[in-house]
Length: 132
Image (tube, rainbow, N blue to C red; front, top):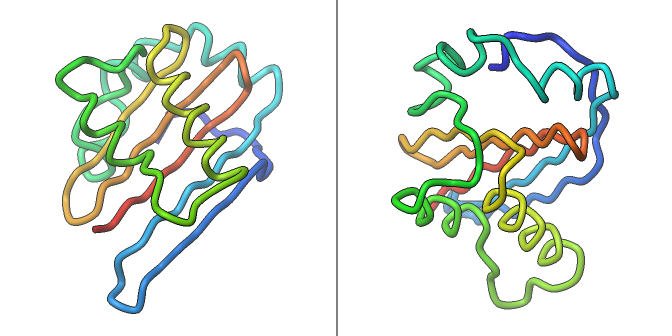
């Protein structure tokens, strides 16, 4: 997906699946400073060729998210009734990061929506799946 192998550890995860198979999953992983340095200035392959077509509809793109793609961001960062606390805080954090420079995003919209965000300054990779 990124063209670079690296270790990461789980920082946060949330999963809510319905009996109909619809659901939402959010995973946030942290990586080390060496990996962060790579993503601060990635090689050309990262921006021009990755992720591969079977994983994403668009290549890695620098944030802020484009205005015509803001609907994707809203879709993958919902706030459903009954959600409160940390999940809502994380959704707000993701929207904030995606709307300012310094990160990279990519997504796939076939069947369910997969949204990916790499945040070098925070040393985070964020993976979201929203199936509705």
